[in-house]
Length: 242
Ligand SMILES: CC(C)N1CCN(Cc2ccc(Cn3ccc4ccc(-c5n[nH]c(N)c5C#N)cc43)cc2)CC1
Image (cartoon, rainbow, N blue to C red; front, side, top):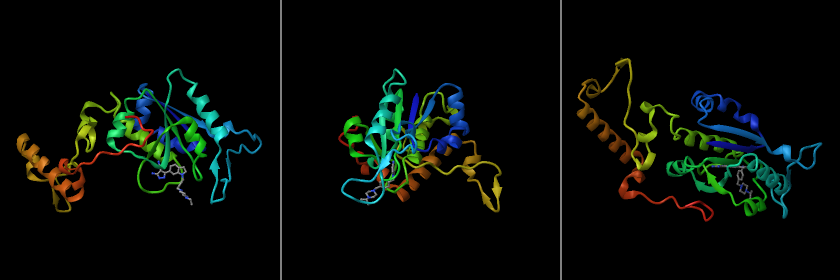
């Protein structure tokens, strides 16, 4: 899979791209991530300006339609595989595991990271990107959201996680809608806090039963909405893929 990230701050991704799981996936050719600085498409070269004040007044600045549309079209043309265009925005469809699994089926994704107050509306009208939000809180730009999407998607790609780390049993993965049971490792006792005896018993049936019960209790306590009897569809935006 290839990600193309359009951003005013490509350096934000430096540390993220060298973290071990992603770095290994890149080295193994399982994923490719290319960054593109929107300022390289600025008309006004001395200042590399790509933003301007909103018509009609209002706070802040908007990213202009001309450099953005030109940049996206040029980036899209850099590779034969057309990119699935994703625009990060507080107003987008909420990212969840089902959407991450859908994104993981794409061969190429372009992540459009805005700043300031976002993009001129004509960027959305012309390019018709899918609009995605990572949650109901306000960020200062799309880059953190882009990294979140890359993180959630890359771990789902075949071969990225070893078998023992499979994402299949993750909470929220592939319809699994239960929170995870508590986990323990050595030492067996720390400051008087011990490991539940069942986990040391070697009785795999008893361990599985205990873990299922722990998941159920935690889910009822914290995320009753995840239980099958309470599940609601994640309503898609009109220009979302089915
Ligand atoms: C009328 C006027 C005073 N209001 C002013 C605040 N407006 C909302 C507003 C607020 C902040 C930003 C900053 N920003 C720029 C690009 C960008 C991309 C993603 C996100 C983002 N935030 N939260 C998420 N889950 C996101 C995702 N994905 C935020 C972004 C952009 C836009 C609403 C209008």
